[in-house]
Every structure is written in structure tokens, then in C-alpha cells.
Image (cartoon, rainbow, N blue to C red; front, side):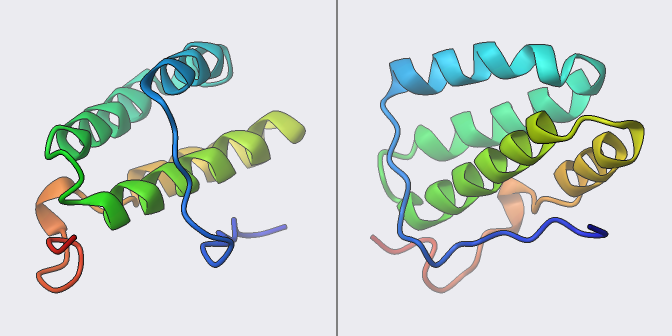
Length: 106
């Protein structure tokens, strides 16, 4: 498989903070060599979650992408797929690049 495909049409993901924290704690072992990318993604999620649901659509999209990346990486861990996952994390949109229409609305 040459690219990671994200299925964003299956609905919105909702996580409680405790389950999200344990999920990231478990994922640190899979991404120990990508700490910079993982910490950047976590900081984006924290910034999004601090707005109390204003960016609900964007937060769920970012979480679903992260879940797809982690599940894809844990199923087949070899150097090629790990490099592919790292590249996909680096290409995630920054927090400042949120849509002007839709993501800012409830």
C-alpha cells in the first residue's frame, strides 16, 4: 500500500479525556522515534480541545486521522510503513490553517 487512506465518512469520533490520555500513553511505545511529530500533534489537539467545542468538527477529523495512523502503524510495523506514517503526521494541517467556513461554527 503506497498511501494511507482516511475514512472520514463513518461518523464523528468522541473521546473522553481519560480514554484519550490512556490511548496516547499506549501509543508512545509505537511512536517513540517520532516524539517530535507526536508532541506537535498532541499540542494541536490540546489547542483545539481548549475551545470547548467551537472546533468540534476539526477536532474529530484530527482524532480520526490519528486513530487511522496509529492502527495502520501497529498492524504492520516495518521501516517503510513507519516512514509513511511519519510523513503523514508531518503533513497534517496546522492549527492556524483552520477553515474560515465550517470549522469555526458549531
